[in-house]
Image 1 (cartoon, rainbow, N blue to C red):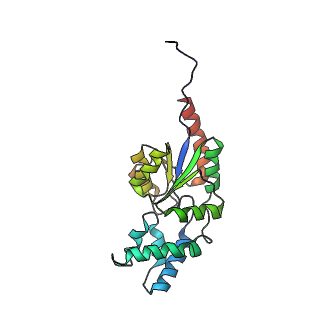
Image 2 (image 1 turned 180 degrees about the horizontal axis):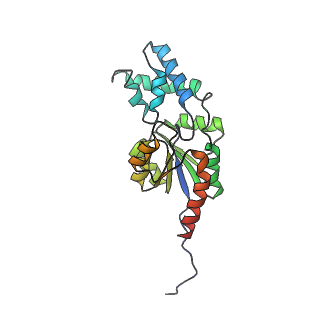
Image 3 (image 1 turned 135 degrees about the vertical axis):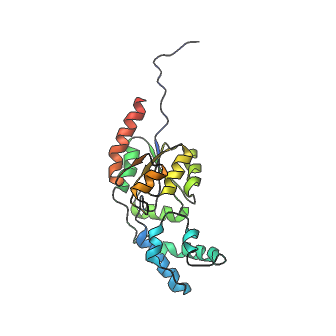
Length: 217
């Protein structure tokens, strides 16, 4: 058998996953407006300011604070129907979000969005903000995010919630956390985050160093 001592084993293409709410987008204004509209329409009391302090988990978990189990499916469907009208316009990108996605792509990598949000609304947000991810996968929360991260071969997952840390760890990906959502740096570290950055503006520099180390290895 002929050996080829000069053949280098190429590392797998760089793939970085990102959470959406409170990682790439500040979804509080839009979600607050949608809950206020749902409350006005149904006559049910919903404390929209309180609801936006708990972003991350699936919609059904928040609706359970305000509706009976029997009412939740209809309220979930209605919330999603009125969401586009109320939530897309007022929702800004988080500082550094576009640059973080672009930094992955500039290294020849793929930036994918893996979120618990329903996929059509996730796509609406990204399109409105001009954030061009290479793939968008919705309806996955916490450990279930590992399904998409594994499928796309993501080496890194960036998120703001302890659920995102669990998703990364379940997938065997590096967990990079930003305390820009409801979870503090201490909570993210306690959940097992490998890296905690102040926010996404710090990601391009960290990513360049990570990519160099990966290439050297």
